[in-house]
Image 1: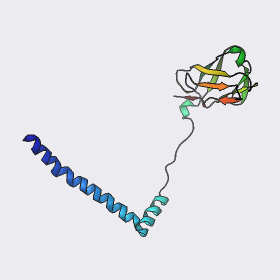
Image 2: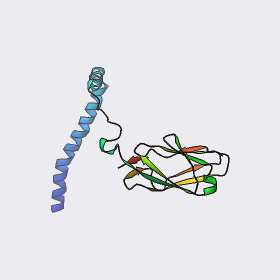
Image 3: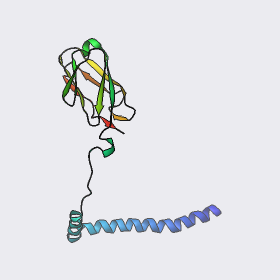
Length: 157
């Protein structure tokens, strides 16, 4: 009996609220079909200032730096890969690993001097503990027809 009484109270309270909500939505949609209402709402939206979105690196992170460890699956095939930081050559792989000092916003890219040669995969094996990108485990593949590749821009927490 108590459950039925509770359900009846819920029905008595929630059904009118639901019907009122549906009615309000339907009336708002009908009002928007009237040209003068639609024009007024559109004009109001156009005159409101847009929110300014701030882009860039927060001031505290402009000097953030760290290192990224890159590892190639083959030192012999990686010898044909030149590594770039922000378009400046850091040279080719001399072993199967290379450590690069990076700052926030830096872009690490690669160019295979023999793109039609055998494929080589380069892995990000380690990064600074506060580095958001590139992530450990990220890979790029070159060779086999692919001449260039790059990692996401360096970003810190």
